[in-house]
Length: 421
Image (cartoon, rainbow, N blue to C red; front, top):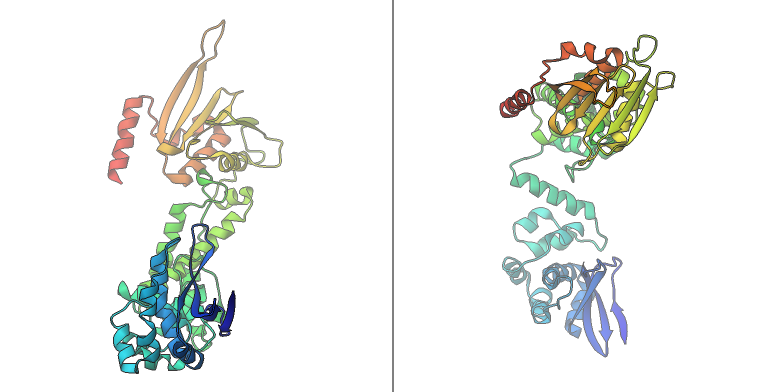
């Protein structure tokens, strides 16, 4: 039989219960192997209950001290009741100086006290009883999160000024640097918002006209890492030049915001428009040489493109790549059967092969091909080569060499480039 004897408004603060006639403190902490919350209890006396009822600060301090014991119990272990009971008198019944001394010796959960309004400066100076004079029953988890975020920054030597902090709040990255940034002007002190917007304007001007294209080799919504790095560097340099007082965290979050927004614009753009923005639109319309093309991947899947269709060959091909590309599917081919020529893209090797039919197979004989290899510089290089082939076939690729027919020579060229990076 279990009855609740005392509880506070916040459901997480430990309750006092009576179980089989015995007073116990009951708290939820941690989780079991199935991620369900665990509940722990240990006995207390009437004297302890009286303090818990009347003194919120002592109640919270006891909770803070018991939580590490719950952590020690893990997902299935038992609470060390002797250790928990041993905390009762020193925390609930001792004088403030003795409580402060105890908290200098034991482990305790600082974040719980901060979330409930404890004075952070006094806590860090070891004056826990005085620090708890500002404690409240209601919890503010964000306050504790900000405290830990500040500690992580301090540990790596980053000290935020008011404008730095305002910029991080504006992008939503004050708590977690890995959070996708967004624009949150309401999170900024109105007095600092104009300064924040001046920094943002500097970044916007620096990357005006720049774009982050898609990289279908890594999936339908993947973007070009080189474009990202280029924009990040450009924005970072401009912001540092115009606002030298900002710390790296603030500059980095502004660059991240600009890059993230540019990448999202690209992801939400139809492939045709993405090709046009990248400067590879010339394969569409009357000037296009190819009439029918066949796209294949390394798994034998084929897709055909007809010139009379509504989409460009390049857009159709890169969508095919985005749909099919994977770690075990990195070779894609574009073939013009009528002209007897094609290109094969090797994404795993940053290379391409152009293949020309020299003699068709007749009378049971095998056809004869000329295969030449070239190196490719990133997704931009691949886009350019695909569009060039679509416009003018293998002959048009001549100027994009050098092309090597000797495989050993090509492998040496690959090694030289790899070693130079």
